[in-house]
Amino acid sequence: MADVAGEERFLGIVLADPTVQAVLARAPGLGVGEWWLTAGVLFQTVWNELTSRPPGTGIRDADLFYFDPDTSWDAEDAVIRVGAGLFADLPVPVEIRNEARVHLWYEARFGVPAAPFRDCLDAIDHFAAVCCCYGVRVDRGGRPEVYAPHGYADLFDLVVRPNRRLAPRHVYEAKSARWQQQWPELTVVPWAEAGSD
Image (tube, rainbow, N blue to C red):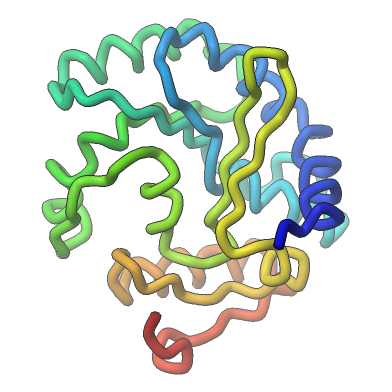
């Protein structure tokens, strides 16, 4: 059952952020089909609001996922170049990635193989922590759409819990340690206590 109140609260916070607003307004200009704004710029914007920190605190980038069956580097690079122009004036870089290509480089970067993702939502489902699994985009009428497969409880309770679908322990622990340094109010659930899905 949909958490309408949680979604409204989430959107009220993230859509008030100028960087989120700008990315959502400009992303259709990339000319790709399916796309989602994801990860840190969303959940960390919520953390900043909940902990009374200035907007943008601790946010390193804005992740923008799209999905294109053309898994060539040249095709992805062409979209990244368009994005470089669209988002050049924003206070953080917008990291654009074709999620259809992730399995080609994931093992070299993180040490474990990844199966190809089916779409952007499948990619969001595989983030390292439950509180990271959010996506926002706008439809053709400019209305926001949210993807929140685990709901909002961990996010609003400032809980970081492993999502063991793909990311290995060392990735989760490195990310959660960095986040807890920036937001000491977070409760980090240790990998060993999280159990398996």
